[in-house]
Image (cartoon, rainbow, N blue to C red):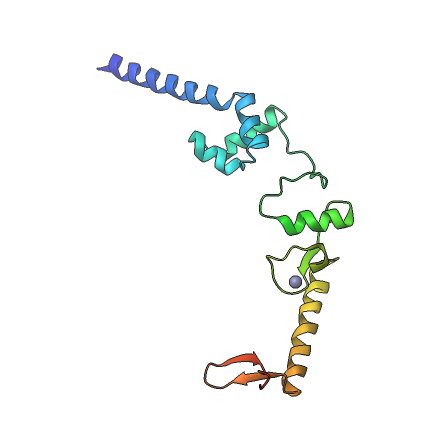
Length: 158
Ligand SMILES: [Zn+2]
């Protein structure tokens, strides 16, 4: 009985080592991390290991994400940041935020993109727009719909 227990323990250890060898493979990690742009968490769940281990081995093998290159794509769904950095000719600095002038976050036309130095500058811009919209309410250009409980642009009568 005692021997069987030991055998099971050894088998378990061997399995763990096999698993370990897989993620210890630098080419595999490099491919997943740099070529497929997978996050450390995604790699961890793919290999059924803890993300701390992924971080450890990435560090061990010296696999690092390169500094963002503004001349290359690879921003995946962050096109507004790509456009902003292209406009600036450098990566965004800490605190800098990207604003869509027309409020449409899907409109990443360079003319619709503005970069604020700080989050509070950005908030100030939004505040100024809110203030203006109330001016338009006062002027009767924007109307309040008492039934729907929302604002509308006054329709021009034909
Ligand atoms: Zn904004």
